Image (cartoon, rainbow, N blue to C red; front, side):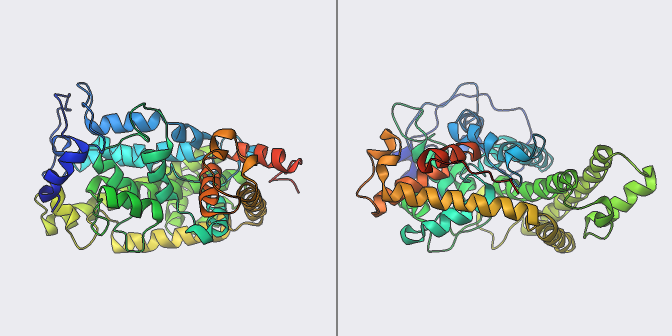
Length: 410
């Protein structure tokens, strides 16, 4: 199906122009091939020293949206400590795992890494609490979805180039960004539906194996680093992990081998064995599914009725149980919830203020607004808030309401 669409895509996006330096690696037949890319929406000459996906990766790393991830919450807001993960450090850890898995599976490592680096670009300040608040506040204009906003960022809101808005990423990167968690069913979020009308992303199909690997790398990264951060923050103890699903046996094995350890050494030993178990299981199950399905090429991967990259059913069940443990002991911990509830208040109050009085927005944002409270103005306010870092959101709250608010104060 994708091959048949190439001629249509060649007109708006232009064919890739080379030569570029292709890494000297053996790739599986079902891997995405850079030389067969559907290209970019706006025609450009490709780099002579980088593949299209390497170039996408570099554009993402140099983007404003990527830099802002440094100051966006993963679980803990920044004033709670310097050593907890942010959206940026999380994205880097996901990219490392995705690239390693892609190499073993003989996939395009650069595409897997690129999708991993981009997967959280659309997140609001204050993590999932900020997204929940912004989604609720904007319900009348379609709500907010971080994957849809990520697409809007890389196709419209980033202003780095004179000839087009956005980063002009390849079709394969955009597909992975939007669909890395699987096919999308209607109704689609407005930014996705609008873009898909201009350049179809095959929303009902599975994405490439590279994108599937990036999504599962997200699971591996966040359960391991949340165990790390939760222990360091004192939200649960090592003894609590003895009975925790999946992590329990790894905790017992480390204690049996080394006895009592300082917290950093215990975390390092426990996390590395747990991460290895998840990676090994993912590789084994994915190879089994690939062998059973026998996809001849990347289009064959997209045409499957289900994911080819996956954990085994037993591991998936244990991983889901561990995620529930973290939900109860960490994400819904009183200390975290107090902070996140205050963060929601900040996001909601800012949206209400900006949508009602667009003159409060910076001049370049205010000039693209409509009337106070209309859909255009609300959309501008939504985009503006979604791009904020935690610290900037708090600064804007102080500017607009002439008072400061502390998220972690008692």
